[in-house]
Image 1 (tube, rainbow, N blue to C red):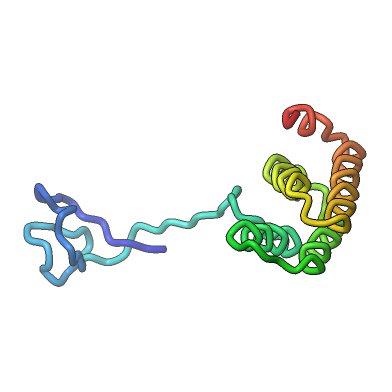
Image 2 (cartoon, rainbow, N blue to C red; image 1 turned 90 degrees about the vertical axis):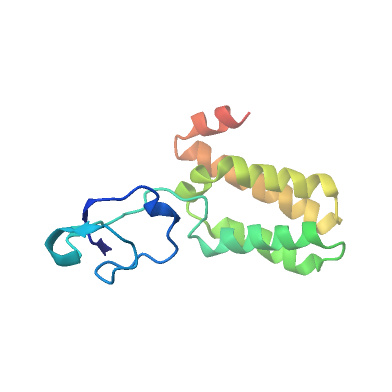
Length: 143
């Protein structure tokens, strides 16, 4: 992203709705180098609250749908639970508290025997994977 640079800014310049450099929409702004876009910014996101893993995203999305409605297809949530086995361990570690909270929440609602069974199965798998990857400190921090 590139933006122009101003050499001075008048009082109240943030209150102007339209701020197009070089068009005189904001009075008394003197632009450096004729309002050319000389300041460049490049951002590389290192962290996010959103997962890029599609299996985890689908699971969270489906759990949110379940919370917002009283009815939900048991087979859909079971499929989303089973797909959690395909996630890389590093993703488990990044989203461990949120993922475990969601799984325990799902387990406590006891929507059906098949859902409870698959939830416990996924919990055991996640704990095992995180432990095998020498990330037990993440589990201890969660507990």
